[in-house]
Each structure stands twice: as structure tokens, then as C-alpha cells.
Image (cartoon, rainbow, N blue to C red; front, side, top):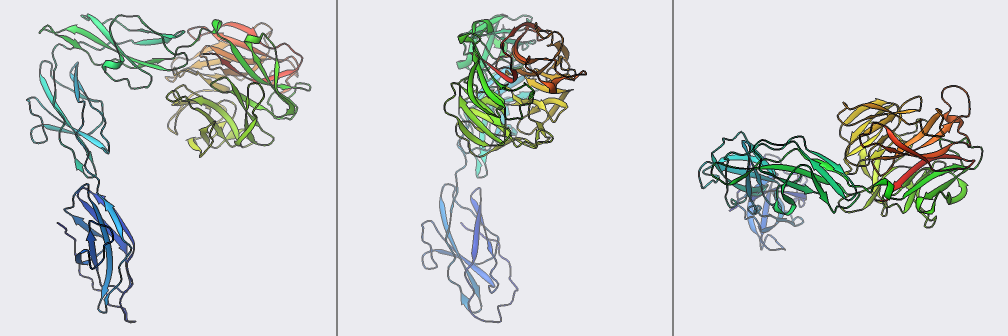
Length: 594
């Protein structure tokens, strides 16, 4: 049952005489029905003896002996699922050492066979899916054109994951599939066989689009010739799977999916149904996946605005001084400007949390991040650094804060981290491929993308965590749409227009934002997307000073303006002035009720 590689040891015994010391630092590496033991060499030893047992407390008297072994020693022919206990002794011409510390090795079983195997025919392809198997690290598919596919009678497709698309197949042919699970300890038995005949399978729909509304999503697609109906599949997470639970049968384009939760993402694929020559219904492969987030109609929702107000001459538009206070406004109370935190200090870059009930801000004098309830209660310090963005995980509703440590002169963070807002713990690195400017970091609804300056003036979208950067423009105060459309803007140098694009980099257009009533053609600043994809906020007009760039002058006339994009994001279709006072109002953030 046990075998071990043996080598002759030609080292001389110690001149000092005496039995060697016991071996130390024993490690075990497990494999399929085997284990490899290694240990630190004992200077006085000429060989080693191994003793093993299936019960704890092995000794030379109770264990089974394997003599004259050397490190590393591979023990084969073991039983997966069993536990083995080992000790070692060192040997030389003077005798045998005492025993080493005992090491226990539990050989896990190879995984069980997959269940729930399905095979769905498409246009020249089959999609094979199955349930995940505990302890499996990979899967193998065996297929055949005759019944009885198996490792011995089938073609192997190794190292696949579910769902797997088997392409390049022949229409009219029948394909049989079984799946096995594998890990370091071996391969499971085969699953129950699944079969599919590729017979007159229609084409998948193209041109699929999804548009969010109030509690609903409208899905449309191009018609497919000879289609008799379409099936719609949806999920709250990407990579929608074909399955009964998420299927909406026999729909037509356009279809409105109603009764949805505003603010939550929905993902969709569409399939085509037609009738085969045999008279049975056939379903195409799934279309390209699309997504949308339903939102409340802005006209029917309420808004909250948080901003910093300069209590002096309004000359701190960059919110770096200590003559500021934290302000708030709730549209249900009318245009009432209320103080959240009134003690003069630094309250830079306020961020309303996804639930709309708290405000996160940074004290850039103390270099610390804080959170406070909307009513001004519950103020608490979170950690050192600067807050960059807040985000809610759509899968579990937990709120996260993205932050960094600001390099003051450059106003950038060398790295961006995140942690849970209500239970700050260890930092998760999300971006350090480039420095990130502190004013312009926003995260998409799915958490996969972030818009920002990387660093100023380079504007673009970063794929998280720490993947590719897509550069989309040059300027400041970038923003990323809060849904998953990945629409992005960069603010121009004259501080009057947004350059709006998306991840493709091929949809760029200019959108003017200093045409709001009351701005009178002057500069505007602090443009920021709200949590609603059509609502933005900015400040202006900036009149103090001379020359074309007067942002640094601030001014008591600077107020907060709310804008609404048209559905095509080609213009701001309406503006509203939010504040009316003789103070400088800066760094606004807007939250729209879902």
C-alpha cells in the first residue's frame, strides 16, 4: 500500500558521536491517493525511518515502519477520505533518534458527479449547464453522437465551467453529453446523460435594448424571420442563465417587465422560438445580454442635497479651509436650507449614502473621514484619509466607502481602497495602477467600473479591481452614470460644457451646462451625477476675479443648480435653482428617492 523513493545517503556520521536529534519542520503535500512528506535535514543523520498509523498517537512501537526514507518522500496507494498520522526518526551508526512531532494528513475525496445537467440546442451549438459540485476545481465534458457517452466512449472537453457552449456543430445531428467534476484528488463518476438534437434551430435575436422606467424595464429587439414567439430571461446579476425560474414565455417586442424594484439592476437575454420540421418548438441560443435599472420618475420623487457653505466671503470653492459648515436640503420641506453641522470647520466633499439617510465627508485639515446622520446626530470618525465614493452592493444591500490617502500637493491618491461603511475593517485594494484625483471618483451600480481622473487631466473609466483603464477625454470633474450604462463625462477647461461618451469611446458629444437660467454665460463648477442617471448638480455662476478662469475667486453669488438630462443624454432638458442665499455654496451632492 505504501511506496517510497529511496536513495543511498553517503554522508558521514558526525565525528562527535551519539544518536542524531529528531527531525523537525515536517510538511505534507496532498495529492490523489498520495502524500509527499518533507522535513529539515538532520546533520548527524544518515537515513530516516517513517512510522504511520490511521489512529492518533503513532510511535515506533505502534506504527507501521517504512525504513531508510529520504526527504522528500512520496507515499502512494492511500485511500481518499482517510486520515493518516506520521512521525519520523533520524538514524546513524550510533542508533535511532527520538520521534518527531506527529503530523496528521486527511486525504479529501474526489468530488461527486455533477447533477442537473442540461443540454440546450442553438444555431450550430449546444449550451451545457450543470449544478456546481462541492470541492470541484474543474469539470470535464464527454460527448458523443451515440448514446452512452463516457470517458471511455466519448470526446473529452477538459477544464470547462458552467455554462459551456459547444460550437461548430451540425444541424440535424444528435449530441449526447455527460459531465464529471475533478480536483487534485481525482475525477468523479459521470453525470446522468443529456441529449439534444439540432433541428432547424432559429437565430438568436439581435439589436436587444433595455430602458429603465418607474418600477419597470422596457426591452426591445429586432424581429427574427420565421419566429413564432420569443422567450425572455432575466436576473438581478450578470450572466443570465436559461432556466424556468427566470423565464417569461412567448413575449413580443417591445415587452415591458413591470413590478420591479427601483434602484436595483436587471439583466436580460432573449431567445427565438419557431417550429421545426418535426413539428416541435425549437429555441435559439440566447441573445447578447443587456441591463437596465428602473428609477422613480424624477418629477414624482423627492430630492436631498448636501453641500458645504462658506460662512465668510465665499472664497473657498475648493473646500480646503475651516470657515465652512455642512448644509442640507430635502425637497419635501420646500427650499429650506438647513444646517447639518454648524460648527465652523472643514467638511470637504460631502457624499450622501445610498440609503439617503447619512452624509460622509472629509476633514482635509485633520485628514480624517466622518459620517453623520441626515439630522446632524450620530457623528462619528471612520478612519484617516479622504472619502472618494459611496456604493451599495446590489446583491446584499451593504454600503461601502471608497477612500484613499491624499497627496496634498497633487490632490491625488496613490491607491484607492474600500471598506464597509458600517463596519470598517481591513482595506480592499481596488485601484493603484495610476494615481486617482480626489474630486471625481464614482462607481457604477454593479461595482465593476469607476469613472475618474487617473490622474487629472486624464479622464476615463477604470475596470475594477485594478484591471484596464479606458481613456475617454481630457479635463476635470469627471463623472460616471450611476446605472450600468457606463455613460461618462469629462468637464471642459472653460468650465462650461461636458464631453459625454461611453465605454465604447465612439459616442462622444458636447453638452452645454452653463446655459441654466441665472448663470448668464459665466463659468460653473462641481458638476456631479446624482444617484439617478438623468439628474445632475453643479454650482455657479463664478463672477469674482478677472480673466477667463474665475473658479478660484468663488463668490457669494455661487448657488446650487439641479439639471435633468434628456433621455438621449444629448442635452440638459430642464434646470432648477436650489439655493437662494448670500453665501458661497460648494461641493454639492444630490440623492433622488428610488
